[in-house]
Structure formats: C-alpha cells, structure tokens
Image 1 (cartoon, rainbow, N blue to C red):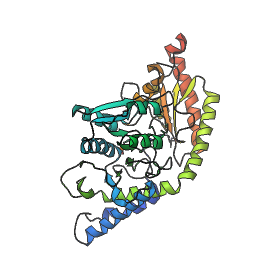
Image 2 (image 1 turned 30 degrees about the vertical axis):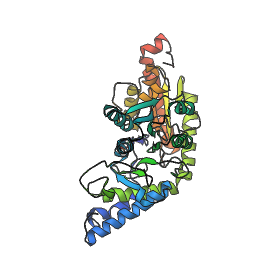
Image 3 (image 1 turned 60 degrees about the vertical axis):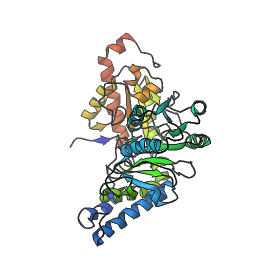
Amino acid sequence: MKKRVYCDFAATTYVSSEVLNEMLPCFNTIFGNASSLHGYGRDAVALVDKARDRVQKAIGAEKPSEVYFTSGGTEANNWALKGLARANSAKGKHIITSAIEHDSVLEACKQLEEEGFEVTYLPVDSKGLVSITDLIHNLRPTTCLVSIMAVNNEIGTIQNIKTIANLTHDYGAIFHTDAVQALGAIKLNVKDMEIDALSISSHKIYGPKGVGALYVKQGIKIDPIIAGGSQERGLRGGTSNVPGIVGFGKAIEIANRDLMINQKKLKSIRLYFLNQVMEKIPYVTVNGHPYQKVQGTINLSFEMVEAEALLMLLDMEGIAVSTGSACTSGSPLPSHVLKAIGLSNEFAKGSLRFSFGKSTTKADVDYIIEKLVASVAKLREMSPVSKAGRRKKKA
Ligand SMILES: Cc1ncc(COP(=O)(O)O)c(C=O)c1O
C-alpha cells in the first residue's frame, strides 16, 4: 500500500482511542436525551456535567456553568461576537478585532457592521503580532468588545493576550479570544489571562468534530445564539450532542495532561523538519514569529512555486498539507493572513502550511522532505518565473 503522511493537524486531528472509547457507550447504551426527566435523561446529563467540569478545569474557569457547549469554534466565535456585542451595546457600538482573525470572527464582524456597529481591524506586523500601541490608540470609551485570537491558524503566532485583555478592561470593554488553535498548544487559564470569553473546538485536540465550547465569565451579559430550547441555560437551544460533548471533555482533559510532553516532542519534530528544509531547499522563507509561536504549525513560502501545484504533487505522494486555513483552501485569493503580514501576492500564493501532531515521527518527516525536495525542484524547472528571475517578497 502507498505510504500516506498526514501533515495537516491544524485543520483537524483524528479522534484518539482513549476519547473514542469514552464516546462509544453514548451511541447505544447511555443514549438518552439530556433534557429528558427520566433515568435515561439523567444518565446523559451526568455525562454532560462531567464533560463541562473537565472543560472548566482545563481552561481554569471559576465554575462549570461558565462553559456553554456549541457545535464548534465557528459557532462559538459567531456567538461571542454577536451575542456579546448586542447584549453590551449600551456602552457603545465600537468593536476591535485584528486583520488576521479566522473568517468566523471576520464575517460575524461584517454582519455586525450591517447592524450599525463600527469595527476596527487592527493590522499586524511582519511576524503576525498585533501592536499594543495600535490597540491603545484605537480603544475608546464606546468600545464594547475586543476580540483577538490567541494563536493564528495559518502562521502559529501567539498574541500577547494578557496585556491585550488588561488594556481592554481599562476601557471597561469585554475581551474575547478565539483560542481554537491555542488549545492543547499553549497553557490556557482564563483567570490568569484575564479573558472574559473564549472559543474552543474539539476536533483540533483529538476529539470529535462538530463540538466546541464558549466560555463566558460569570456576570457578563450575552444574548442567546439559538432560540427554541432550554439547553445551555436557555442560551443555546437544541438537543445536546452527548457523544460529542463526552468526547470533547475527555480530549481536553488529555490535552491538558499531556501539554508539556506533546509540545516538547513537536518542538523536536519542527526543528528536525526546518533544519532539513533550510539545508536542502533554496529560496524558502519561514512565515510568522521566530519564537512567539506554537510548535506544531510551520508556514513556508517557496519562491517560484505555486503552492496549490505543490500541494497536489505532495498529495500524489500521499502527503497531506494545506494552503492557508482549511475553511478557505480552494479560494483563488491569497490568504488574508499572509497579505496582512506584508507578503506579496506571489509569495503568499507560494506558501504552504505544514502542521504536525502527536503521532508524527521523524520517519514521516524524512518522507515529507524527500518528496518536498523533488516536488519543489520539479515545479521550479517548469516555472517561467524561475527563468525570469526571483520576485519580491514584500507587497
Ligand atoms: C483559529 C480558528 N478559529 C475557529 C475555527 C473554527 O473551528 P470549527 O472548525 O470547530 O468550527 C478554526 C478552525 O480551523 C480555527 O483554526
């Protein structure tokens, strides 16, 4: 059988066997509706409560009731932006976010603009960091909400969340962070980091797809996201996805337990990969912050190469990588994140994201490198650009 190497863990992960084993009884044994009043319902509620406790502990929240289960990060982000902005608009209708957020934040902001909110999109520097000075200059007494992602999904840059949250509070505004890519990659503690609301997702941490959570600090007002049910304290109606929630609870517990060991392993894989790339492939640059970044995600620009063609050649060799985020791959436009860090269209369109996971081995990396070296050389040989000369990195 042909060798296959998965190198797209930032897009999604497989479900780990520990998680799957905990989920299985929820499909046919403990299958009750968590809203039912009988014993079957109570059994299901007990499992949902246990999962909520696990999420609460993993993110350092004060109470389990501050955790609301959702269908994933996209819903959590939509809910946070719209629910918090609408419920707190009496303070003012100004929102601050960044230019490199996930589309679920950016699109929610666009919808809020149509409702009369004003949104400031902070730029980032060439490493993907929001400038604290820029934030200070843009905070106003009418700012009701600031939403800045903890870790970027394309380049892995980690923002200075605590400082941003602290300044947001100086202006009496609410601070939300999209922590989907941070979960399992950096230590998250909502109290220490002064976070009021936080979005997370299960399928990035070896849990099932279609489940996530929004943390909302007790006392903070938020409008409901889905009407028509008393679930999630009346704020998010719909029969609870018990197997998904149970899986997420187990996955987050494991992610927290194994955080250090996983990150240490990923760091050694990353360095092993990067050293070989730099040694064997000319005209490659690493995008993102040199050290304030997560270990598992690496974004590389290959000069004189179309990233989509490279992705396809690698795919033919059984290697799975990605151009930009999974949600926008396939789009003809260059990534908004790579444009925001100042890359020219040519550099942005020559960029690939490699993301490693806890099962990635050095043998996997060796295989990726072998095929990458050959594929890049092949594409450059065919490229009219390589004959005409190298292009400019900056836009
Ligand atoms: C930073 C970030 N936010 C939000 C999401 C959306 O999460 P979900 O896939 O659970 O809807 C993703 C998924 O790629 C992400 O990377």
